[in-house]
Amino acid sequence: MSREGKVLAFANSIPQIDVKNSKSIYKMENFSDILEKGNQQQILEFLRTKNLLDKSVFKFEDIYWLLGKKNFYQEIIRILDDRGIFNQTVW
Image 1 (tube, helix red, strand yellow):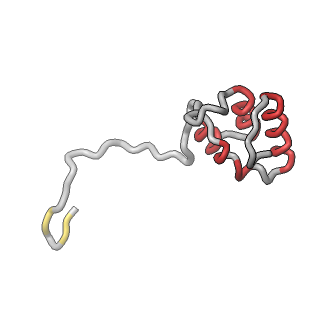
Image 2 (cartoon, rainbow, N blue to C red):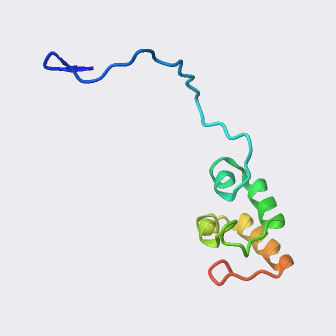
């Protein structure tokens, strides 16, 4: 790269770049991954099986935007009710 005839930067070699159409996530281990690339069933399975009271694992505010979908909201409420978990904003 140069500016006004002076070299500002150069590279000895450029590594090969592999361009993909979408981001690949091989393991969806945390809730952020599931929210980003997962589907509703994966979100619900996470809510059924993970420790929702551990804030390092799950934060209720991450799902507030999903509560506008009636059927999905009702399923979330069923899961929370079955697990004996209450969140004032969700309920």
